[in-house]
Length: 439
Image 1 (cartoon, rainbow, N blue to C red):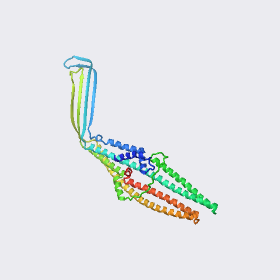
Image 2: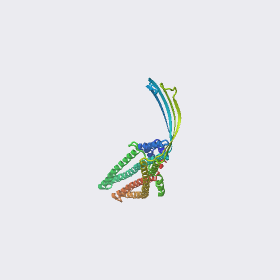
Image 3: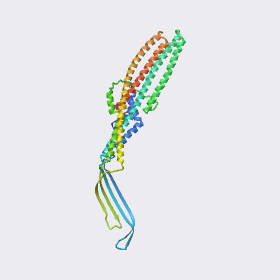
Image 4: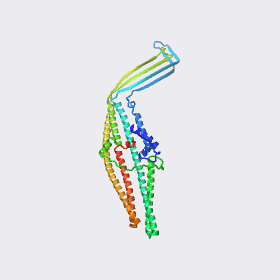
């Protein structure tokens, strides 16, 4: 199958490049995960098994050919008496040998198109298995992406707190100098020290969150947990998605929906297969046999027979206790259920896509507003810091400006993270997540 082969090739490619570059992109991380995930390999093997079963022979569209042979040796005691006489003949150790061989061919010419529908079902099962495998792979991709961006998010938050610690450290050094040389109060110094210690505690928590995010990421891509890959920070790029286009893609390419559609086709073929049992079956048989028999008690010196035969048989179903009727009714119900499940899934996916699409637009608005807020907080902090150095603002005012800046940066990072996850969900629902990864 196209997607299976593409994944295998990409996984092999990833094994050569993933750890040789200075940075690891999201696509490379995904390929590492797909290469190392055992359940994906099991899923791909299931597709191969399904492909192996989808042959003309499995569907009964090819003739069957059987060969048989027999060698029989006997050593018997024989007693004979003719009807016209009372004479009895007794022989001991009469040897007999029988050699036979035959080859038989059978072919179903017509069975109500049952074998044809069976072959179509076997082919459809490949598509069904492939769609089910895609659903699982897409879930893995989403998990990898979420953990990938979470590592970047926690690193950005940690870096922002490092900058805040540096600010608090400068405040402490300034307050300490003012206390020693220019009449600053001990109370002011202690307040600044409390802020510095508080920032240090927050930094410890941020460092732990960053390390835990890294461990979770390493686990999901199945590499050593203490690995420290350098990830590419391509956190957000706005895309002008059009809802109607996304909806059309979803209806034609969404893996979950495609799996249900293939299952609907299988149900229809099951119905046709059962219905074909109402038709007569016409079969053709051909054989060639050879027989050679010798016996010490035989009146023949040579007893051989060989030749070919052809037969044509017709079987007409009349009544089998109502089993066919029950099977036909049940397969018809299953076919209707499959169609209903497909319709229900279409409505569910449409609701999810519309909801996520609106969430994405709202997330982008938040990102833009948070970006403006960071710029404002930076300007406010810079101005406040200058006035603080000149003694024009008090510690609490400076601390508030510092706190607003770190909150604004963390809020922006978190908003970008949420927007990216929402975008990935849009891509998955529209059915192009795996194809984008392959590209």
